[in-house]
Amino acid sequence: MTSLFESPSSPPLATRTGGTPASQRPNRVPSDSLLTQSAAVVDQVRSSPSATSANSVSAKSSGPRPLLAQARSQSGSGGASAGLSSNRPRQLLQRYERNLGPREGGTANRPLSSDPAGLTHKGISQRFLDRLRKNNPKLGLPADPRQLSPKQRSEILKREFFDRANVPKVAAVPGVMRQASKLPEQLFDSAVQHGPERAGKLLQESLDKVLGTDLRITKNGKKEHDGIVGPKTRSAIAEAVRRNKLRDVNNEMAVRRERFMRGRSNFKPNPGWIPRARSFLMP
Image (cartoon, rainbow, N blue to C red; front, side, top):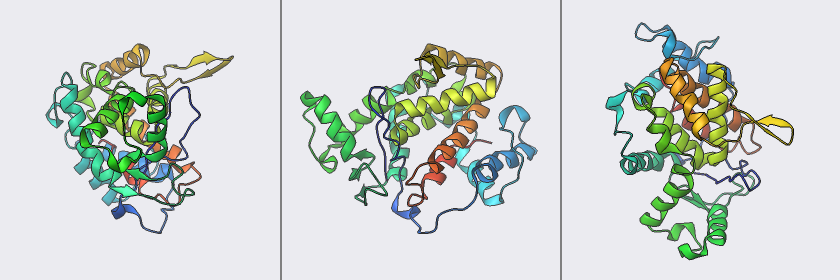
């Protein structure tokens, strides 16, 4: 159970990159590669009679049936029946919070080599809470994340992750909840796990990969994704909807997210990261 907050003005904290509930903490580290597992799940779905090429991510290898079944059972229809209207952000947040609980688990206080952000309770780390208290003393937050009230925790998740990553605005883009209802939730979950800026970059990179766009900005003479899910990024999301490519974008983001996790120095003691990322794959 690990999470972090990464703001544009602060150095990346992504050495702490995701939750590991107790049920997902085996000592054995998965040895399968990123592309032969994550992308392979989608590749198998592409070849199924019910799938179309417009709703899949290309992959070169096939994956085991259990992963395919998992992706199907967790994805459902992926359409409007999957949940709440995008113009009801509070209810959307409540649903995402409920889903976040099993991924983050309860309380964890592991060695810093495994979890650099220290003590974490229900997705709020000690390091993040310390920074939040320092920057916002008027909030009157307790010093220990275990002492946060449910209301305080919910407000933190809303203000620092749900709103900062512009999740409700993404969900409000016409067609998003119908075509790829998992995308807004994946953006929220990534923001909690990796920070809003990193989550935004993963989304922008995925849009560019699938659509052939270029959402990078020029900073200090170098082109890079800024991680801000602003009007330009949301316009690209709308274009993906028009081209029936939004599921491709969602799945590409899940694959890139796994690649990012595997590159962290503390990946080995956190095998639960991979199932978390793959849970957002859609057929």
